[in-house]
Every structure is written in structure tokens, then in C-alpha cells.
Length: 406
Ligand code: HSE
Image (tube, rainbow, N blue to C red):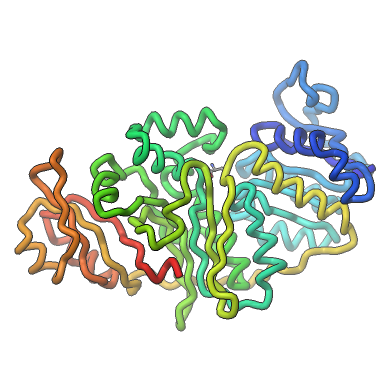
């Protein structure tokens, strides 16, 4: 029997215990032996649940148990997850995590520690919830020069944007629902300010482009400024607003951006609603591929963690080596060209004078003092310079180009 421990019995940790119990037969068949959670670490008590019998409040019980070879870290946050993970890896135990904050901040160091001690540090569940995107990048798209990764990588914000558009819910109500369903981070600013998606695109881009991309270098904007008027303009333009995380290889380097974007139905990401996530990966041989699934929530995320656990148990002697630690600096997004959607309280003549051939001029009954339009394709730097000095601009949102979906 393979003995596993779980650290952190919140939404995902409890899900891991549930999946390993619920699917114990099929997992035992695939692994060749049963996989059982023998210890669960948490500060809380869990009376009357399966966790009660295996609960410990002392990390040393896991660290010092020679029979435990794989540990699940679903505590979240950096402290004490970093220290615990480091000690476990140094003791030669493999660690499987859903903790994107820890992977984005200390992933390089923890992977090096794992290699040095013949252990594995696995993080499939850190990006895209239940979508097997890390394994796809590591094992399936290995013959590709990756050109672009674009995704909806945060379930909470996608749930909020979908519910604002389809149900007319306000931001706060939709966020509260996402929290109640266990999608949101403990501090939901990480979701709504885009930081969670930023960490995820940094992790995926590091794997895609073969070097370490720091999340701190990724330009990030969240969805807190999106209001019902923006959603209504988007609908009138036959678009959806989605928080997109993108990185792309250009001839002189790679850029990355997390920002709300107005995207049209030519882009399959418009069909990704609610808590669902999707990632499009474009390779130079395969073209565009797309991966879709639940981006957050207990069982989907737990499924990804369990997949890693099973891989560790099955191949204990195989140490993953598919991560390069060489840092990659990012290009600025200044020169990236696209149209921009603008809400404007000036005249059309004034807008044409400042931005050129504007199109899709749209008016909402509710907001008679303004109109919306799309600029022609412009470099971000040029658009920002024009908009910064233009007092008639109420706000603007990037419009995804059709090519970004191909
Ligand atoms: N808060 C995250 C989300 C959880 O909403 O996507 C999954 O990483």
C-alpha cells in the first residue's frame, strides 16, 4: 500500500481525501497497489468526518514517518507551506501541490531541492484547476516551439463576469457566490485583481518557453473596474469581457499580460462560462490546441492533485527534469498592436481626430452622455499616450484581435 499524507484539509485537501477514497478501486488497479491517506495535517478539528481518524496537528508526524513517500500540500499561502515543503523534499518525500502562490514564488528553488534529493515537486493543480495543462506542456507538446499561451485561468473572475453578463448580477453578489462555492481565494483580491491568473500564466509560460518567467514581471490588471455599462457595451458589440492571461513569443522575446479583454465570437474563449477555464496553446507545428475544464472547486482541483500523487507512486524512481531554471526577462507590451474599446463623452469628430478611423460606435439608453467605439489597430503605447491626454475618455478595454484566437 502506498501511504500518503495531506497537509491542509480545506476545499482542495478534503477533496483529495474524498477522491482517493471514492475512486480507490480504480486507482489501486492503475497503480498496482492501494493508495491511502494515512495522515492529515490541519489546525482545525473534523469531528464525525473521515479526516478525524487520521488527523494530526503536528507536521513532524508526517515528516518523520518513513512510510509516507508522497505528501499533498493544499495549505495555500507561503507560510508555513514553503518551510514544510522544503523539509519534506529534503527528506526525499515527493510533494504534490495546488498552491500556485508557492509554485510561482519558490517553484524554482523547490524543484532544485526536489532534484537534489531524488524526489518530485508536482503542481498540476496549480493552473487551470482540473485541466491537465502542466502534463500536456511537459509531456505532449514537447516537440513544439510554443508560440503563444492564452487562457481564462481564474474561475472566480470568470464566474463573476459571466453572471454579470447573463444574470444581471452585480459584482459583489457574484463574488459572494463564488466564495460560497469554494472557488475564491481566502483573500479574493488575488482573484479579482488578477494576481492569481498572473501567477498561473507565469508558471505555464515558464514551462512553455523553457526558462523561468517571474510572475512579478507580468503586467497585470484585474476586473474590479468592470461595471454593468462595460458589460452592456460588450453585448451590443457581440462580445464578452473575459480576464485573459496571455504570453506570446515575438521575434525578439516574449511578452505576457493579464487583463480584461473584450473578445468576439470568433474566439472560442467567449464560450467559456462560469467557473470553467480554458487554455489555448499554439505551437509552430501543431497550430492551436485548446484545453477546457473546471478551473476551481474541490473535486476538479483534487483530481489534478491525485493525478500527480499517482504519478509519484507509480514512478518513484523517475525524477521529472523538464523544467529549466534559466531566467527569461519579458518584453514590454508597449508595441503590441490591437484595437481598443473606448467609452467616450466627447464628440465623434473629436474621437476620429484623436484615434483615426473609429468603428462600432455604440450608444446605451442608460448612459446618454457618452458613447462607445473601437479604435483602429494601434500599438498600446500610442493608444495610451492618446488616451492619457484625452479628458473625454471615461475608460477603455483592450479588444482581442481575431488572430489571437487562431
Ligand atoms: N481562486 C482560484 C480560481 C482557485 O478562482 O481560479 C483555483 O486556482
